Amino acid sequence: MSSATASETPAADRAYQHVKAGLLDGSFPDGELLSEGEVANALQMSRTPVREAFLRLQSEGFLKLYPKRGALVVPVSAAEARAAIEARLALESFAIDKLAIEGPEAMTAIGRELAGHPACDGTDLSDAEMHVADRAFHATLVGAAGNPVVTDLYNTLRDKQMRITSTARTHSTRERITHQHAQLAHTLATGEAELAKKQLREHLLGTVRALGIAGGSYLDPTDDA
Image (cartoon, one colour):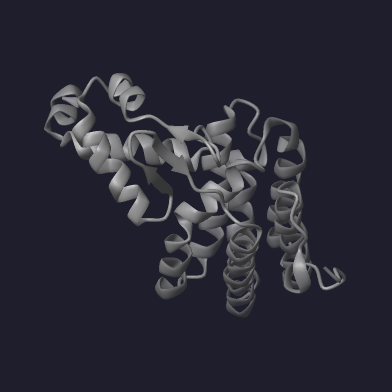
């Protein structure tokens, strides 16, 4: 069934999905020059659908094509990275405020749900799986607020978030990240909204700093940069 489904998927779409997945999980890092031929060989297809995929990804801002040379993975600027994390903080903080208004039961319920999430441990996950779990943990928090507009806004940030944080979500930082997730889940379960927002801010600030970027006045009000 799966092979039949794969054969029914247009080659250009398969190439697009393959390359985009590599861009989002960090397999194709900023500044790398991708080769049509190498991607085509890896997927056992001609170069034409790969070229179509590259063009599509260029239109989305992920790649910059250089004729006869390949496609450069466009680096994410510090300003772009910070802006995306600031948007996350705003939307996730809204979710905590909304849950707090709904009452302690709502806070406790999402806290307990998140406490059992793989992103609070991640021992048995690969780095790529942990990266996906991390994103799912935060999306679950936003979704619990029950505001479809906010959820849609958060989901539109998905690709940008995953690409930016892929370089910060390394194996060496896993212990800190999983501890902060577990800490946030516990605080939500005990109904401490203001403390939860403080922990969320510190968590996201850590992500920005792991990228070598100053937090800025919104993420870190004490930062003069």
